[in-house]
Image 1 (cartoon, rainbow, N blue to C red):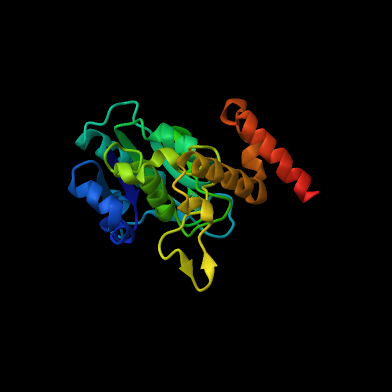
Image 2: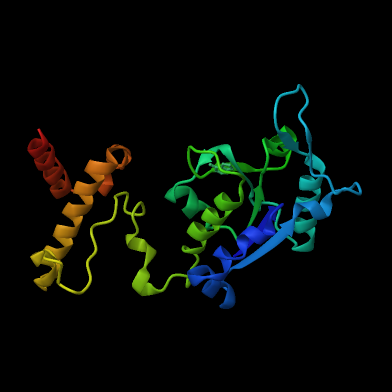
Length: 250
Ligand code: ADE
C-alpha cells in the first residue's frame, strides 16, 4: 500500500515514520510512504503557497494552484488509479473511526493533503479532495499529525504489517468495545495482584472474564459505543451482564 503525502513540512514525518511497526513495514516493502513538498509546486520566485483571504479576516489561506499541481504530479508520476482517494485532513472533515480506517485499508494508494494556516482554498475541498477527514474535535497546527494518525491506523490493517501475535482482530473498536485489562509478570507488584482468574488456566472462563471487563469499561467510559453497537455484536450473556452492571450502579 502506498501513502502519498502532500505537505509543507515533510521533515515532521521523519521520526514517526522511521520507528517501530511503520519502519518495519516499509523495510519489508509492505507499505511505502512518499513525501511531496507542496512548495515545490509554487510558481513565483518567493515560492509562496499562501495568501490573504478574500473578504478579510485574520490568517492566511493556502493557495489552490500548488496543491492541485502537486496532486496532479503525484497521480501521473505514480500512475495512480482514478478511484484513488484524495484525502484532505482538516478539522471540518468526517471524524475518523475504526470503520473508516477499515474502508481506507481496502485501497492500494491513498493521497493525503495536509492543510496549514487558517485553512485551504475552498476549491481544494470542492474540486480536488474526494473526502475530508478530521481526527477529532480539536484544532491542530496542521494536517501533518492527522495524516500520520491515518497512516499508522491504516497500515496496521495491511496484511503482514502487524504480526499474528499482535493481531488487530481483537483491537478495541474492531469488536466495538474497549479493550479488556492486560497484565504481565510479576503476578504481584507492590502488593497489587493480578486477578486470579488469569492464572487459572481455564481459557473459557478467562475469555468470559475478559468479555465482562470489556463491557464494564465500555459502559463506564464510552456508553455511546454500546448504544451504537449493532444487535448481533452483543450476546444474550452480554446483555445480562450489562443489566447486572446497571442494577449495581443504581
Ligand atoms: N488539521 C487541524 N486540525 C485537524 C484535525 N483535528 N483533524 C485533521 N486535520 C486537522
